[in-house]
Structures are given as structure tokens and as C-alpha cells.
Image 1 (cartoon, rainbow, N blue to C red):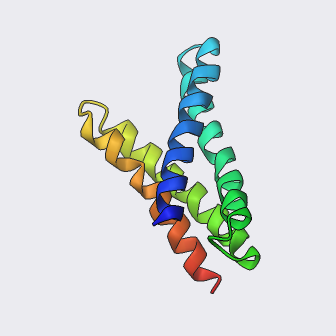
Image 2 (image 1 turned 30 degrees about the vertical axis):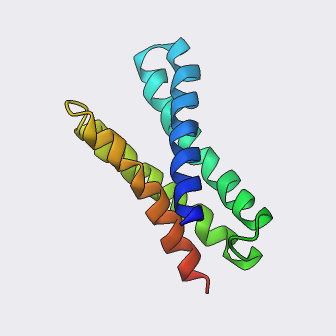
Length: 107
């Protein structure tokens, strides 16, 4: 549960910060920055999970990959549900689910 929540929060924050920074370069920069920020935060969130001993070191790579793939899936869902506030908000759960799936693959 901690891994799920932490990766959801950090992934969402990474996407937000990336889009804020990318927004300085226009609409395309906004979207590109959000994608880059979210994908780059995935390895950091997995590293933090190893540091907190929520996952073992051997689970790092698959957890980071799962969180990154989950973020990409969340971005696709969010982009297709922008007319509703619920879609983008709930899509962040895909980041946590990806991290959990990745951590389970390495067991």
C-alpha cells in the first residue's frame, strides 16, 4: 500500500512539475514536459522504495519500469478524459499499479 501511494503521489507530482517547466515552451512543451517529468520520477520513486526497504534491491529495475509504464498509461487515459475531472485524477492509480506489478515480477 505504501509503494502504491508513494508512486502515485510522486508520479503525479513529477508530471505536474514537468508540465509547469515545459509550459514555458508553449503547448507542446507543456505536454512533453509532463511526460518527461513523470517518466523520470519513476526510477527515483523506486529508489526511494528501496531506501525505505519497501522493496528489495533486486526489485528496483522492474518496479521503476512498471511505474514508468504505468505513468505512460495514466497520461494516455488523462489526455482522453480531460473533459472530466475524475478521469485524470483516477488515472494516477495506474502509476501505482504499474509499480506494484513491476515489484511482483522480480520476486
